[in-house]
Length: 417
Ligand code: ASP
Image (tube, rainbow, N blue to C red; front, side, top):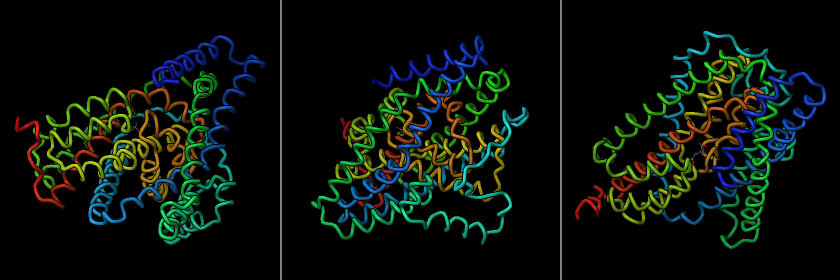
């Protein structure tokens, strides 16, 4: 199913859920049908999220093997990716904890019961020692237990340890590596099937929220969307261009005139992966980045470097925690920071790619998965702008790496014509 259809069906599902909730909400048989729709979607996602995280992370790490020789370039690129993603997440968290007009209205529900295994950090565990011991306990579990309990930190830790060990021990042509890539493709396909249930799931979720989906809540969602846009623009229009100027020696004016095309494609497709060919062209022709740098930094960036996504996920977690009355201590915010970063690294560069990874953040701090239904209502317009910032981050990375390794980038070939 094409993304356009899925978006239309999502909107249709939401509208239908809202209408049915208004007209027939409380009818026993309809309540049961809607419950089934919710369960099919949400439990389907829960079914696939464990294997998805485990396999996609291992497979991603194993792909790095092809670039082992490119140590220096790899080092600069990863340092740039990680530090800008961390910066974006900090900006998002700082803004959402300072500017939160939606807290003038009350949350929409009582705190949900926390499932065992997802109480990563409780407000009482404020001490740093207790915090780190708690985090270590979640991380250091065997993979079977991590999968069975959907312990996200445990899954990520196991995937990273296994992936790194396999990278060092297995030869590139090992059948184990091929099997892991193949299994990952299978799990992606299964994820796609459950995502197709999203319109049904959203219908059931919105139906359930009809009582709560009053003007106040819509207002809160709108306020949140505005704050996200402001924070994303701050990162994309001020912070990243300043870095490009400082470390890449390219003025903001030249930068924006060179990357207009990929930004436009990112805004319209909401997909870093789909924008990649246009980004590669712009990097070589307009930004003067050499082919080896462009073909290393940009594909890797389209896969793991998502500033806009990390910023959004951190902000969304704090917003949803308020709406669902889930207390977040300072320690929990630190956990949100790390998990938002990791889940943005793991999110695929496709439209709404971060919605599956967003659940990692939600599960980790005990936000009910139903909350994703609310995010989906404002998700599409926000995805356009965060994808543009994701792509911009990759392009700026290619300029900076080029300068650090080869000196100043050449003037773009098209600029010479
Ligand atoms: N659409 C984003 C991208 O392709 C991923 C996401 O944040 O959903 O970069």
